[in-house]
Amino acid sequence: MDLTQIANPSFLKKFNKEQMTELAKEIRKFLIHNLSTTGGHIGPNLGVVELTIALHKLFDSPQDKIIWDVGHQAYVHKILTGRAGQFDTLRQYKGLCGFPKMSESAHDVWETGHSSTSLSAAMGMAAARDMQSGSNYVVPVIGDGALTGGMALEALNHIGHLKTNMIVVLNDNEMSIAPNVGALHAVLGKLRTAGKYNSAKDELEYLLKRIPAVGGKVAAAAERVKDSLKYLLVSGVFFEELGFTYLGPIDGHDFTDLERNIQYAKKMDGPVLLHVITKKGKGFRPAEDDKIGTWHGTGPYKIETGDFVKSPTTAPSWSGLFLKRLGRLLERINVWQLSHLRCL
Ligand SMILES: Cc1ncc(C[n+]2csc(CCOP(=O)(O)OP(=O)(O)O)c2C)c(N)n1
Image 1 (cartoon, helix red, strand yellow):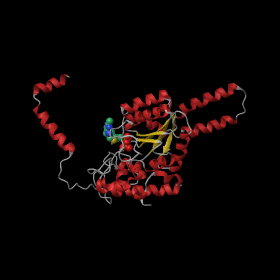
Image 2 (cartoon, protein in one colour; image 1 turned 90 degrees about the horizontal axis):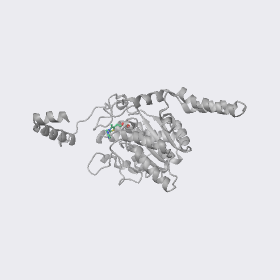
Image 3 (cartoon, rainbow, N blue to C red; image 1 turned 90 degrees about the vertical axis):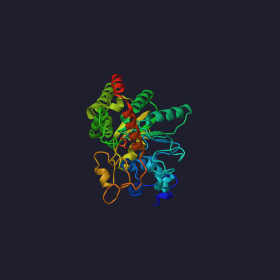
Image 4 (cartoon, protein in one colour; image 1 turned 180 degrees about the vertical axis):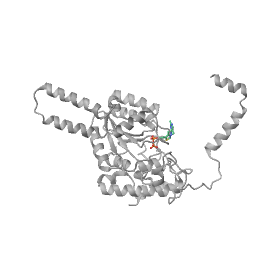
């Protein structure tokens, strides 16, 4: 398939699992090849290939709002929404933006760069939808790194309180730029290893339904067993306690698992959290093996060896200039000012 011929994601509606698997392979090849000359956020994008295909197959963008947090993982989304032909201009003046950009496409419904804004944006879009009695889906996609940002936690608090209809996709690759840390990371770790709470719950419900009903007491007891089961199976049902229906963990590279859970989420009322497990750098050995975030975003590289190619440009970098200027300003600060600063 010539990816540059894609105009919009509607062709995916008829794609079967084999065709999607083939498409995922081609997108990975395209990304690895193109980014080797332009540089770019290769690790995050290789990790969301299947997830992005599944989202664009099962939702109707741009009526349904897919909101990419941080936005550096939106390359696959850009390919599926008609921008593959512009990838050779990435990271160049007036070239394809490396983040969602509303002026580029109607499918880019939110502009990002800074992390942790997607849930708040989703809350606003869902509130606007509800005020207009709309029925579109709102689907923020947030990474486990971005989820630790204060603004994201504030939005979780708000969404869980209002029980707003939306499907939050948590793209958990265990990495921020470097490996993720913190208490929330530990909670996600427990959920990842706890197994499929929902399928276990469904099985228990099935068994309970087969017990002949002996009146309300048995039914009430069964409900209590079901409720306590989640505590047995998942230590600390963090998201459920916040008011979300938690679905997961879901294999983010398995179309069947993704499709089953997304379809299930679409039928539910209230906020749903899909906990999708992905592998950063999937399909490119140096990026997959990366343990410290070297392949989060890179300059040009050699595909065969994974060695970075030194940029031929002699122009100073923005961050280099910033550091130089900051250094000069600091040199001007005298000792009195420094001790005064320490008191603040
Ligand atoms: C407010 C803010 N803080 C820090 C950053 C720097 N930053 C860019 S990407 C990123 C990590 C995001 O990790 P995650 O959301 O898990 O996405 P992944 O790259 O792993 O897919 C960070 C911290 C930022 N863009 N915005």
